[in-house]
Length: 186
Image: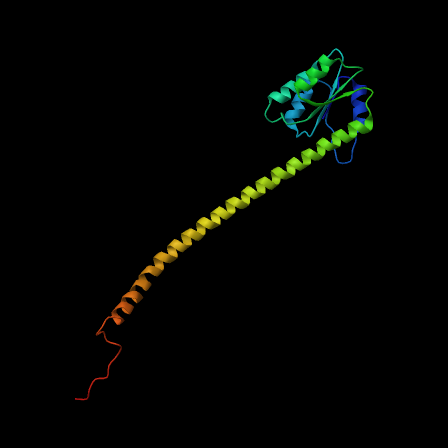
């Protein structure tokens, strides 16, 4: 996501960050940015901090306060030589990087690509975690079905086995008949 108060700054950022594997979402005000952040999954937010404005700090602080947006990395861009107070405020608001204008296009592009790659990897890990949870649930259910089957099987086999055991017990007793005997002629 790109946020800049000035249209020229927004167009410049779009030109720098137009990458094949990255979809850009742009906002020209803090309110629009916060609305778009709620609607879209964002890998990184690039916020152009104007000298007089505090909108980008407001966006960052509100992002950090929101559980769902708190993990979105923020790169602040500022005009000229930022004083230490502004830089500290940016990091305190949640920035992972602070870039001064004029922006070195390759540096911004590489940093953005890194955060986009990390986002893709995080999404992949979450998908794998969900897949593993589904597999574990299926295995648990299969184990429960196996236990029920074995319980039914044990119950059903108990009666025939009991009859066989009784017969074997009778055959094993002393003086028990060992099968049909031939009767003597009369």
